[in-house]
Each structure stands twice: as C-alpha cells, then as structure tokens.
Amino acid sequence: MLIPNEAAAQRQKMPTRSELGEQKVEIPAAQQEKTFPLGASWSVVQFNGKPVYDRRATLLIDQNLRGTGFGGCNTFSASAYPLRQQGLAVGPIAVTKRACDKGAQEFERAFLMALRATNKWDLVNGRLLLKGASGEVTLSRSL
Image (cartoon, rainbow, N blue to C red; front, side, top):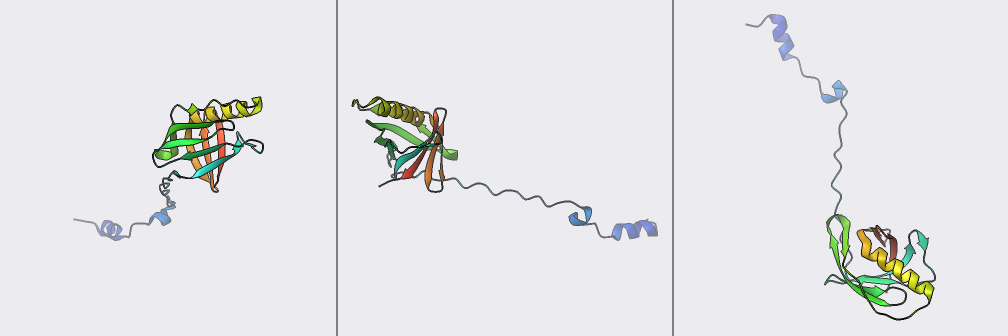
C-alpha cells in the first residue's frame, strides 16, 4: 500500500533531457568514399609544395589499373591499384632509357620515386593529390 505522498511522487512527470541540462550529441555522418578518376589524364603542377613550371610530367591510370605517363624525360608504366579509404598502391615502374639533361633526369627520378611510394590520394578543388613517404605530388587535369 502506498502512502499518499509516495503515490503523488510516482505520478509526477519525469524531467526531459533539456530540463536536466543534457546536450544533444550529434553523430557525424559517415564520410562518403571518393572514387578514383580512372581514365583521366593528369599533369604535374606541384611537387612537394613547389610549383612545377619548367618540367612536364603526366599520369594516367586506365580502367585496367595500368598507370602510364611521361616523367620529364622518359615514358613509364606500372600497375596502380586504387584502394579503400583513398589508398593507392603503385607497383614497380618500367621506364624507357632516353638520355636527357641532368635537371630533367633528377626531376624524373624524384617524381617516379614519389609515385612509387604513394599510399594515399585525394581530389581537392579538381586536382589530384598523391601523398607518400617520398613526397607529395599535385596534378591537374590535362587533355
């Protein structure tokens, strides 16, 4: 048997969360996975944060996951696999053996090393960013 005061206490409305001072917690929406732009042709515009004006280097990863391009002196090819969470794996790179000036060869060597070491990619403001242990390459769409 309930005592009148206890019965009245049980019928009282429970306070709401806002009345208790609790804040609503927003759960962030899952970030949508980006799709790697297969079949698009790209040209290097920055290398390790510095603009590239005097050198030409390109990259295209086709539907067969084959990366091809021009490194500044020679053409190259390699297998290239876009992975989940914007990862990228680039296999061993095959390069032609043309002779070029020392500056072009040094740029090409650094570019290909950065490409081979790439493990992350992103699309920012229409540009393709490749990041890895050997540097960061920014590419812009080309024809």
